[in-house]
Image (tube, rainbow, N blue to C red; front, top):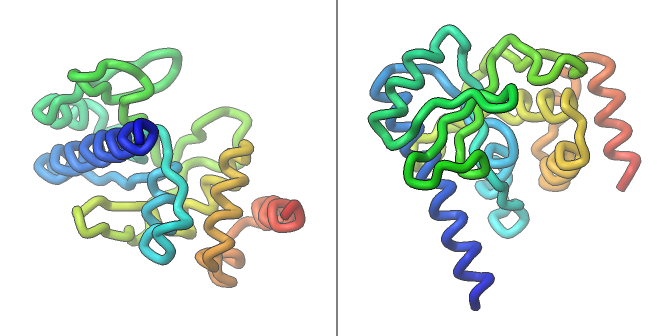
Length: 188
C-alpha cells in the first residue's frame, strides 16, 4: 500500500510539472516537445496503458534561442531556471532538486559530444488530452538510438514491442542508427 501511494504521488507530481511547463510555454507561444522517458511512456500508454514504464523526470527539447523567454515564462508557473553541472533545467521551486526538474535539451545540438546525431528538428507532435506536445515516435527513436544508453535501448524495445517502430520510422533513420536498431532487436 505504501509503495502504491508513493508511485501515485510520483506520477501526480510528474504530470503536474509537465502540465505547468506546457501552460508556461503555451502562454509565451514557445515551441517545445516532451522527449525522453515521459514521451515514450505517453506514446506507449495510448496504445497499451499497462505496458508503459514510468520515468523519473521530465525532459523537453526547446530552441536555445528561446532560453531567456522560457526561463521568464516558467517562473510564472513555479519554476526557476538553473544551469548545473552542464545541464540546463527548470527547477520546481517547491521541490528544488535536480530529480524534480524539467531538463532542457536543445534542438539542433548534440546532448553530449559523443552522440552521433543532434536533437532533430521537430516533426508534428502527438498532442495528449492535457495538451502536452510530445515528440513523434520517429523523433524519439532517432534520439534514443543516438544516445544509446541502457535505458534508451529499453525504451526502444518497449516502443518496438507495441509496434510503434514502423517500417516508415525505420527507413527514415540514418544507416548507423538502423544498425543500432537491429542490434537492439537482436538482443531480445
